[in-house]
Image (tube, rainbow, N blue to C red; front, side, top):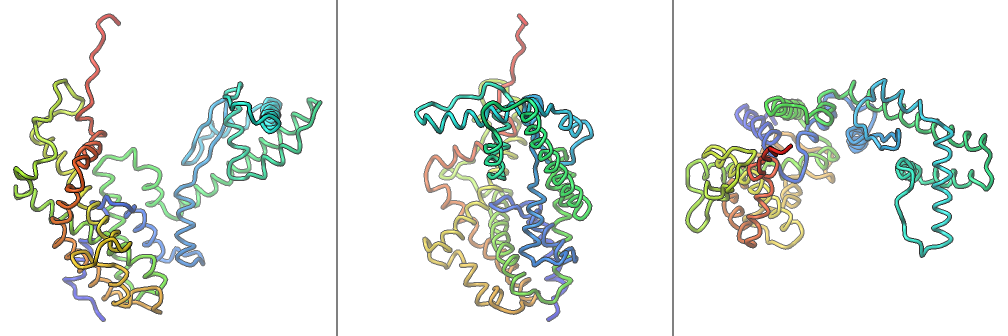
Amino acid sequence: MMIDPKEERKLRTLIRHIAVDYVGYYDAPYEMFDWAAWFEGSTLGYTIAEHSSNLERMATNFYSTHVDGSSIWHTGILSPEEHEALVRVDPVALGRDAVSQVERVRELTRNPSLEEKPFKNPGSEALYAWLGGPHPSRFDTVMKAVHKGMTEEETEALGRQILDEYIFEMDEYMDDEREFMDKWPDLYRYSRDFSGMSLTEFEKLVGKAGDRFATALLSRKTLTGEECDSIVWLLCDWAYAVGAYDKVRAMYLKGRLFSDTFPAFVTMDDRPDYETVGKWTEKSVSKMNEIIIRRYSQMAAEDALDEVENGDREPGLVPDIDDRLDTEGLMIDYPECGVSRIVAVVRSMQQEGMKAGLRLFHEYWEKGPEQRSHALKDLDSLRYFEPVESEDPQA
């Protein structure tokens, strides 16, 4: 069935809205980049579950090096200097550290009453973590290699073995990073470079995630049951959450959200009696309230969806997504799912979120007075309550 052009435009707008404004329990832009890559043919022979697992492995790829007594965590391509610093590690010193760790473990095994204490060498604890890290057998191998009266040559050989494994793992890590960077550059930027972006750059990138996913989805007439199972449930959850947010925000912008019985979260009266890093103005107070509204309107909606799913709330005001998708034939049990039907269901979930959003938002704050104090903690990063440190005239 062909999708009405008007409904297609509305879906594109909704998906971009989710990519930019959704702040619930899932990482929507990441998932959209993931799904877009799948639909665009970047499957490399995997199933959709394997494809997603492969991307997740690359997106969460990290490597730890232990140089000069400190542990350094990398999420990106190591610089030549970082690589060289690792290669320059003294294998004799590394071997001695490994021997000291084994002796320490054996001592604790012989005398369990001993209290664990920090390692004497500042680099030894990091080495111990590496030995017992993702390869537990590695520590067993080193344990077997260590014996009383080890010669200098044996200690150096042990250190060289450990160093060679360091370098081998580091090279594997960098190969994964290069593959990730080459095949999925937008997702790589989202996973690696977002902290250095301006708000405008970040919104442009996540908006691109939504646009690419919407285009890729709408290029298909049907999805397989496996694709539906991976994608449609989350789309419904997100659509309901942002629909709820749209309703609450609309009431706020109209000046009809707060009242004597439901006061604003932040007012100028909450301004501390000291100078803060963030400047207090009517505009910044409005921004603080909007941040709380954005997050907690969506959280309230998703909590309600979870309550229905877990049997703690009867479906009605809040739908049961599983039942809805089963009724519409959009589950893994069905061989294929029509994209036009997916569009209709996702759009309807947005509308239901809008209908229920205000009531769910009020319900959320009625759970207890501590809810508001929790919400204010979300403003810490904006530094509206952080004092400006005055310069010490004596310094």
